[in-house]
Image (cartoon, rainbow, N blue to C red; front, side, top):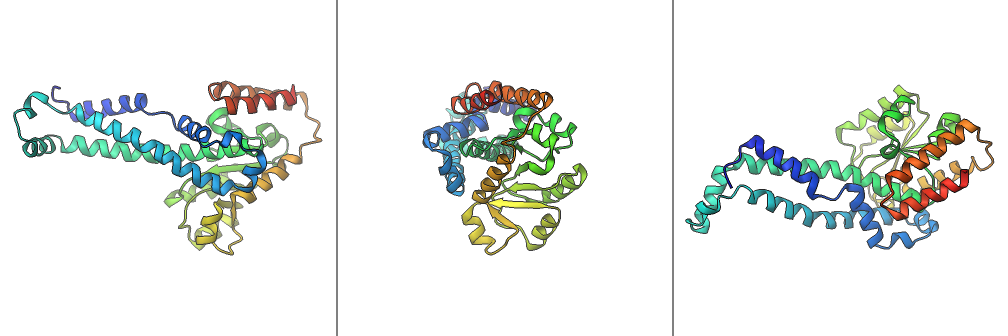
Length: 304
């Protein structure tokens, strides 16, 4: 193939990546079905949420690695001048290739790293979304409803899920649950209490797998009414006896209690209309994913 400039290669990597990889939700859904979680009842998810999340994370990664390996090989192949390397011995061919394209190789590696980070966050959100569905705890997901809608209604850009839904949140914030998902907090954790203060959110559940949150960070978030949620193993290993950190099982229990508060609520026509619109939006978004679609169709029948 003719010589490709750095910028041309960057654009090629970008376009090929979008076509080559399965979407984060698609990968999570496939793994969910392959592992048989679609056959589990809600009590399983309520009692084994931590185990489920650890299992899904590991298996999603194992599914992803071959995709990335194949993609990397294919992208580097675009740079090979077959006619030229055929005249060289293997060692000289490798030396020539690395001398010719050091920046291309670096940029591909950087692109892979950035893609991994982005996908990890989206996959974590999808894993939690399927956890909530499996536990039969209703929610509106920002990914389905839209970031703009969440921001417009003072829910905040960092909130990923509203339980039971946005309609209940707008009717009575105190009887709802807001969940944000971040695999690790890093230096960006300060954004979370700032967002809580800016939007006037009463409290937020921050789901994470981070094992290195300092006591000071936990204190600041606790004072800002941010509850850290993690796996049972992570809590027992890194945050033992720390009441400022709860497990996914505890979060689901609170979510169930929160949802039950609305059992006898008399929804106004406006409330019901908003509920139905959002449920239909999620049915449309997940039309190609039967397990999720059927869940929302069941929800729709409850209000129609």
